[in-house]
Structures are given as structure tokens and as C-alpha cells.
Amino acid sequence: MAAKQTELTDEGKDDGDEEFEDATETVPMPDDWTLSSMIDQTRVALHLFLNNRFSEAKNRMEPFADRSMYHALGYSTILYIQAVMTFDMQDIEQAIQALKKAIAVCDRYRHKFSMLESLSKSRSRAIYNDLTEEEIHAELCYAECLLLRALLSFVQDENLLSFVKGGLKIRECYKIYKECNKMMERPKFTEEKQKTHFATGVKMGVGTFNLMISLLPSKILKLLEFVGFSGNKMYGLKCLSEGSYDLASLRGPLCSIIMMAYHTVVCYILGLADGDINYAAELLKPCLEQYPKGALFLFFAGRIEEVRGNIDQAIVKFEESIECQQEWRQFHHLGYWELMWCHCFKGDWLMAMKYAEKLCKESRWSKATYTYQKASFLLMCEDQTEETKEHIKLLFKDVPRLKQRIAGKSIPIEKFSVHKVKRILEHKADIVLPALELVYVWNGFSILGKREELVDPVLTIVESTINDILKGSETDPFYHDNYSLVILLKGACLKCKGQYMQAEQCFKEVLQREKLIKHDTYLVPYTTVELALLYLKLDDKTQALHYLDQAKKNYKGYLLESRLHFRIHAVRLQLNGSSNGSLPVENDLDSDLVLNEESNITDVPNDEDAPSVSTKL
Image (cartoon, rainbow, N blue to C red):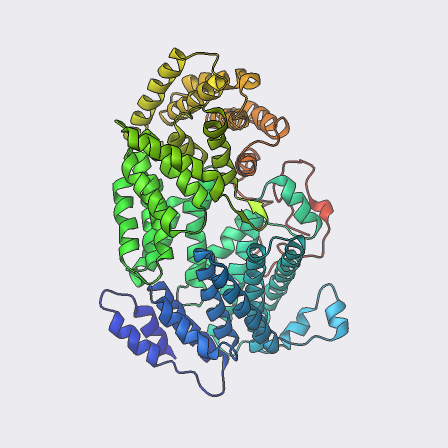
């Protein structure tokens, strides 16, 4: 077995393909279906997958997916990833059927508790000591399959019943992870590897749940806490970090991927762009050593360079990520999306438009958004011909028709795009700097601010536009909307350049026009939060809290409201003097403080805006 592990670990070096073929052939599935053989086979499939050999990975799992819990988990997970990337209903249905079968397979391996044990709120650890290793691994695999099934059910069907069923599955999954957390204390493991694989899986599940829940705005958190969910951000990051240390374990690479996604993507879209990029780079280094041509890891390499402001280096990495595999073209869409923004940051609007066009043709995620982006980037190009202007109008006209619903809800950025287009279609009025507005709402100024040479051209465009607007007529029904937008953009540029006093003046000027803004009402709450962030930089917590409270309590029903509430939540964490999502946790994974049902909701602090502050539920 040690020889097998060495071969797997060495896979992925420059000349490692031949070595990996040997490794795949030396781990046969024995007739007795031992737990070790299941895990080893699934590890090989994971290595294939991370080396862009997606069909091989799937084909390796499929023949035994009806008998082995780990093969069932691996096969259904691959189909799940394919489904969420293609957004094709046929792929989604295929993944759901595979996950249903996987849940059934995992359930066959699970221990059947007595009625008394099942009704008990908390099973004793003595019970878990009597479980076999197959049975405790089955609990973990069952929880993972159940979670993926719940997430797909939200996409498959839009009715209320699917939401209820999905929520119940997530609740059950959450409870199983709590039980798995206790199972880790059992003293009996025949092999250290079995314990490592199980512990890493628990850390991945517990860590992801804690991290995901802790990021949610306080209103959602209160509802989740009421039904028994709680999340601790620092504890979640700690669990995932511990899980990522061992890349040889089955779920070690997955822990690294989740951590890198959090620090390089989630923090920049939903938070304050305060991800630990250096730590993400440290996590990425061993992954790239093992998978030098792995599309996903090259993507993260590009994302790290992008958020550091090294746009040219980021473009190179994203292009490598696209070129290194052609089997799953859906992976290309991740690269196209980032390349589009990279060219935006450089002011190369034509190239940005071309990538938006690629996405529009190939991706099913949001054709309305891609079309609006394409038109917005074209609108930024100079020396437009009459033919180009007519093409832009046709693109804008297409946006409402392409709007869709996912899980019964409109995509917020699609609602934003349709809202902006209505001004053109219904009022025959132009929109101003739509591309830079998109950069702003996607938190792109946090990246522009890393390099002054990226900010200065944007500021020049904004100031020129302000002059054009001032020359226009104040009788224009959207005069104040347009002026407020460009003043907000100017303030964002000045804040990036460290000119805080001038930025403050811009933001306050927008707020003074609150009652004059008719169409883009989102500008006022977003500007209010910009002022809070500005005062946070100046270490004036009193003023920061004041503007946060205004943004949260005074404005409702505006565009992209949920996104702003995520950011407000992140600011509150900083103002509470902690970057975690909850109270400090000193205990290790054997603690009951996290993911424990036995205490009650009275542990939650009184501050109504406190995030997921209870470590006990």
C-alpha cells in the first residue's frame, strides 16, 4: 500500500503521465470490496480528474457505483460538477438520478440504529465505538451525497415543495456531520490511513458548513439559528486549513480548493476583498507541483495574480488554464469570465466584449447578463460606426427576452441588467458608463486599487463623462441618476488613490441627491456603505457604524440588495473587532462547541447585527 501511495503522490510531475498510468493499474478493485480498496480507487479517480482526465475519472467510477459507496460518491460528484457547469436539464436529471442511487448505496453500508438510539437527541460516544470503519465512512459519504442532491433539487424544480425537501436534506446532512464529528474520537481504527481519510472528510464538511453559514447576513442567520444552524468563520477556516495539509488524503485537495475559492473569489464578490492571498498562494504551490497542468489550479493561479493587480500575468495563467484541456469546455467559461474582467481593468473594451460574446454563445448560466455586458463594453469603444451603434441597440433589446429563473428566483445581476435596459427601451434615454458600473457592482475597484496605473485611466473617463453630463440639460429625467453614478465612480477611484477627503465629498454629494434619483435607487445605499468603508479605513468606527446602520435600516427593495447585505455583514465583523464569524473557539475538532445541537439559542448575543455569533445551538 505504501508503494501505491508513493506512485499517486508522484503523479502530476512534468513527465508523470506514464507513472500515473502505472499507478492506476496497480490499485485493482478486489472481490471482497475492502474499504481501503474503495478509497484507493476513488483517490486515483480524483487524481485523474484534477489532471483534466475527466472521462477517465468518470469511467473508472461508473462500473462499481452500484456496489461501492466511494465509487458511488465519486461518480455522482463528477456528474454533479458537470451538471452545474453545463446547466443543461438533461445533465441535471442524470446527476440527480446518480445521486439518488449513491444515497441508496451509502445507506446500505450505514449502521441501523435502534428506535431508542434514533430518537435520542445525542447518541453516546460508546455507541460510535462499536461501529465498524465501513459504517462511519458510510455516514460521511451519505452526508456528502445528500448535500449534493439537495443543492441540485433547488435548480431542478422551482416549486415550494422542492425548497422544503432540499432544506430538510441539508438539515439532515448538517446533523450527520455533527455525529461524524463525535465519531472522530473513537479509539479503534485498524489503519491510520482510514482515520486520516475520515478526519479530512469531517473537517471538509464541518469547515465548509461553518464558513458558508457564517458569511450569511444577520437576517438569514437568525432564521437558520432558530432551526438549529450556526456557523463560526474562524473555526470553519481552521478545519479546512487542517484538512488541506494532507494532499495524499482523499479530500485534502478538495479542502485546498475550497480555501482558495474562499480567499480569491468569495471574499471579493461577497465581502470586503480581504481574502488572504498569500495564504492562497501557499496552498496553491503544492497543488501545482502535483498537478502542473490542472485546469482548476491554473485558474486559481490566474485569480491570485488578478487580485494582486498583476493583470498581464493573470491573463497568461487564465489562457493556460483554457488551453491545457479541451475535454470539458465548461471549464473554459471560468477563464473567459476572468479574462473578460482582466481586459476591462486594462481598458481594452473590444477584447472584453469578445470574451462576453464567447460566454454568450457557449455558457448557459446567464445569457441576459453576458449580452448586457457585451453591449456595455461595445458602448465604451471609441469611434463607433452607425452599424456598431445599431448592433448595440439590438443587443440591449435582447436582454429582457433572455432573462431566466433559477430555483424559482431571478438572478439578481439579470434583474439589474433588465432594469438598466428599460431606460433605453421604454424611455429612449441613454445609460452612462455601463461597463464601469458593472466593474463597480462586481467589486472590481478592489482590484483596480492595487495599481495606480489601472485607476488613472478610469478616473480620466469618469471626469470626462461628468463634464459631458454637466453640459446637458437638467430637464433630462435621468440627469440626477447619471450624475450620481459617475460621482460615485469618481469617489471609488479617489478612494483607491488614497485621496480620502475628496472621495468623502463625492460620496456625500450622492447622498444629497437621494430624493432626486428616480431610477437607480441602489446608488444611495451602496454609496452609504462606501462611506462606512471609507471611515473604516480612517479608523473612525463611530461614523462607520452610523452609515452602516443607515444603509441597513433606511433602504429596502433596491437592486442587488442581498449583495450589499453580505458586504454590510462583513464590515460588521471588522467593527466587532474580529475577522471571524463568531465567538473565539479554542477547542479542536473533538469539541462539541461547533455543530452541536445540545445547547440553546439563548447563547446568541444581543447585538442584532452580530453575525453567526453562537458557537452552540
